[in-house]
Length: 265
Image (cartoon, rainbow, N blue to C red; front, side, top):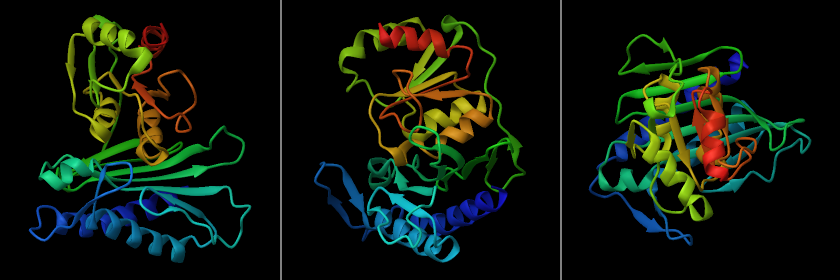
């Protein structure tokens, strides 16, 4: 697993070299996908580069990416290893010049666990000069602007009234809207840091609860080991297993059951 983490960090270096060079570029090309979300030439360039590197380094592993789907020509179709790539998480920020975006690289063991177990995760935000990473059994780590890595540890906040909550946006909560409103009303502080950053702040202990009502596998696979190796807990907002769930709730663990009860109600 350490070899996989080393490879994931090398992939993140490659991704950063492409994405950062295109951030704020005057000739950046942006299109609208069928789901009405934006995609830039940087998204596609990063994913193509990472797929090519993985095809060489791990030719028997499956690859799933936001822009190009699932690799269909893996030599060993029985492989239980699956790399999950989000070339640029928060593309809307990227194309508007907001520096809060990142490349997410996760690796799943799709053996016995429902939807697979996320065993390696790297989140690299080069415009912020910040990176987070983890492998199962090796702890959760972060570094800023090339500084020495430090270990992540979730907070010890045990009361909802003392908690800091971060979320993606106020919409899309559907039947859980009332529970979400009660959660943010009961918390000490709420901020919409959004996307990957909300969850990485939970891993660092700066935020106690983060949640999103709708997302895809590539939005969450890399986050799970980083938060859990920091001592936190990650599920769907319905309590289902993550990263298989189409939503996510990250907490310091101490508040998880109480938040789930609010959202389920």
